[in-house]
Length: 204
Image 1 (cartoon, rainbow, N blue to C red):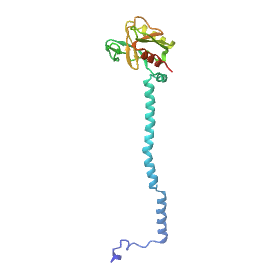
Image 2: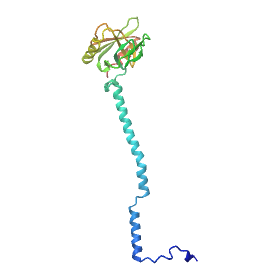
Image 3: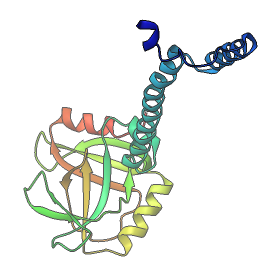
Image 4: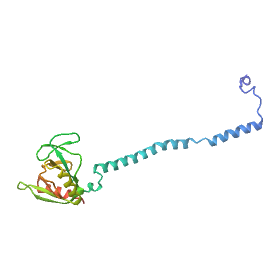
């Protein structure tokens, strides 16, 4: 009965040579197929490669962001105290940024363009302030900085010039004449604070 149920019972017997051919074909196909372990290694390697590429991209963005923050100047980061001078207005107009003056609490609107930074300073010294036991900082610009300052202020006499320390507007006096190589930061500071600013704004 079991012999009658065999599905191969009625097939003609295969020749020995035919069986050998089938066996060789099966073995050849098995040797050409990739092993599970090699396939698993290739699949697992793909996320690692993507993560490595992503890390390189993030690093590139971080380096680019650092250059943008410093205005393209790597030396600006060498100063402990960030110094900037910008033109400012008393009324808002498109493209200006609102800022509060630290000494008076008043509001000004800063121009986007930075006139001079730490890179343009040749010297900075503590000077006596307008009140007893209060001090300011005298800033001397190098030749490049003095030329930029002259060009910017000559066209804007009667307007405001903002002096910023670490992004904060300390004072914003009105221009009575063009500025050259010298400027005074009237910060009304203690001597220790004035010394910190004067020493920190110079490039090391």
